[in-house]
Length: 177
Image 1 (cartoon, rainbow, N blue to C red):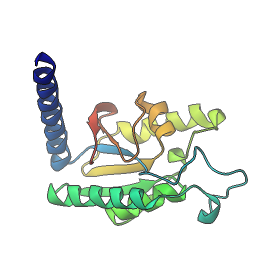
Image 2: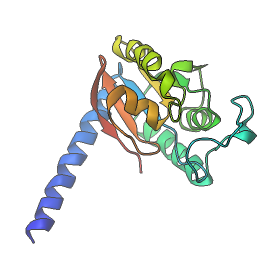
Image 3: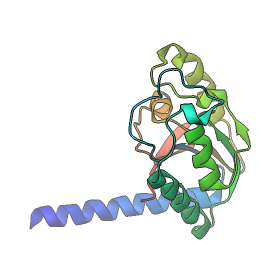
Image 4: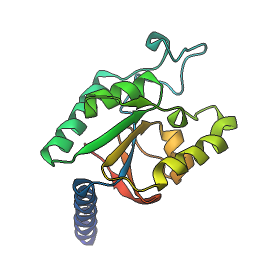
C-alpha cells in the first residue's frame, strides 16, 4: 500500500514538472532538443549509407511517424509557438521535424549523429553549446540524435523525447506518449 501511495506521489510530481515545462514553452524563448522518433530496428546506419540517399539509411518506422504526428498535435493543442526548426542531415531527423513541426528551416551539421563518430564530439559539442546558450525570442527546435543530445547535456533521451534548455542550461525533459 505504501508503494502505491509513493507511486501516486511520484506521478503527480512528474505531471507538475511537465506542466511547468509546457508553460515555459508557451512563453517562448526556449531551445528544444528532440531526439528523432522511432526508427526501423537497428543501431546506427548500414555500412556505406549516404546522407543524400534516404534509402541507404535507417529511417522512421510507422510507429515513429505516428509519434511525430502526436508531438505535432500536442504542440498545437497547447498553443506552443515554434520559431526556427533545425535538423540533423539524417533523413530520420528531417522526417521527424517535418511531421512534428511542419517544416525544416535549415539542416545543421552540428546536429549530426555522433554514434560511432567520437572524433567529431568536441567540435560538435562546442558548436551546440553556442547554439543553445544564446537567448532566443521564439522557441528554437533542434531535431537530432540521442548520442548528440547526450554529448551536450549528459541526458540519454528516449526516441521522440525532448530536452528543454534555457540559457544553455537544462530546464527539464518532456515526453509526448
